[in-house]
Each structure stands twice: as C-alpha cells, then as structure tokens.
Image (tube, rainbow, N blue to C red):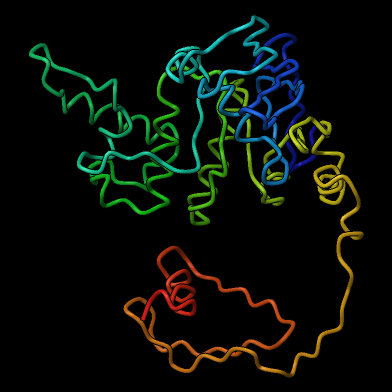
Length: 318
C-alpha cells in the first residue's frame, strides 16, 4: 500500500531505457567527462545534478547527438547506438528540452511546435485545419490548453511561453527518453505545476526522464533517483526517497557544506545602498535600503521589473 501523497515504486525493465558506459569526452587538452557510467531507466525520473562545469550539459549533448564521445558508448534499450547528428537521436526517440528555446519568430505557436513535420494538403499547401486539430489535441493531452495560445506568433511569446513551445515540440512523436535542462527557469508557478503534472504522466507511460536542475525543491518533488557528476566523473547515484539535501550537496562538492563557510558577525546598521523613488522606463517609484551584511531578495513575476531595476542600479539603464 502506498502512503497518501507519495508515488508508488516503479520497477525498471532490465536493459531498457538509455545508458552510458565509460563515456569520456575531450575537447583538445580539456577533458569534460572521464569514464562516466550511468543508467536512466524507463518509468523513472533521474535527476542529473552537479556544480557548473561538472559535465551535465556535455553528457546531455552526447545523448542527443550534438557531441560524439571520445571513448565509451551509449546504449538504448540495451543495444549500442551511435548518433551522427541530433536528428538521429530524435528518430531513435531521445528528446531534449534545452534551456535556451529556439523559436521561429514569424510563424504561430502551432507551426513552431510541428516545424519540420507540418501537415500538408494534396497540393502541398499547409493544411491549417489538420494543424488546428493536432495542436488542440496535444495541448489538451499535455495539460497546457489554458497557458498558451496556439495562434500567437513566436515573436510575441514571453520567455515562459517560448519554453513551453520547446516542451511541446519535444513531445510530438514517439519519445522513449526526454531530458529537461533547467525547464522551470522561465516558468511561473502555475506553468511549473503543469509541467510537473506532465512529467508525472510521462513517467507513468514508461518514458525515461532526465531532469537537470539546481532547485532542490523540484528535485525532491519529481525524482526517483539522483545521479551526481563531479569534475566530469560520476560521484554516485542516490535514492531520492532515502537521502537529504545535505547528502546531495556533499556529493556534489566532495565535502560537507559547513566546511565551506565560516560564520561572521557583520554590523547591520550601516546603510550601504539606498534608493529613493527610482523610476525608469520599466519601474516606478522604487525605494529601498540595503544594509551591510544583508542579503536582499528581489522577487516578482516575469516582467515585474526585477532585472530592469538591477540594470538601472548597474548604470545600464537611465
């Protein structure tokens, strides 16, 4: 019996999913990966974690055909595969949702999603009726029908909507493995929740999910397993249900986090930065005091003016 609010355990099929064996990747004299062996089983979410420069992006690019390994091999459903280009990986059922979306600005969301496989009439013209049926069905199936307009032009999309287009594009066709690279970096809370619900459904369908994020709350919300890279090598794989944030961080950095920081008492009465009624083209009448030793979080939704205020403070905006 499963405790309410928890996921039932998922059994991986032996030999299924995608795996890497002794993967090494060198760029000239620089070794980005060294002898990495990992498995990504079907029906499970494997969080791929590590500090910046640990090799996560390089490993994803090998899985999706952007890079060829210097040594080692990739296995899909137990059989060795070699991808000369990303199209080969896609045809094999491996998808990636990149951190930086690639959007065609002058066509609609629907045309962006099915770019390269648009439905055509007998006269080779775009079949808009078939396109409308496909995008309507897919948005409903994936739970995004209320968060994005299929008729909006690519040039009119917000950063969050551009990310959703990449997710929709990756989920067209038959996917066996889907890698998400920092997918919530531009998403609002409701959009992120729709994404998490989608990932739960994809897991239930037996798809192998690779999830890259630095956000611990998301990792422990989604992951069955946590695979950690450190300095281009595998530091180990943890059962997400039986580990802690501290253990994950310790594995990422190679030592206990408390040894990296020494507590210092800093006087907090000295105001080092003060804003009075700061107004730009993007923000209005912002007043703020920041004292020595403080960490001030600047929060707000996409478009609220956080970045613009920072640019004004740095002298980049008048």
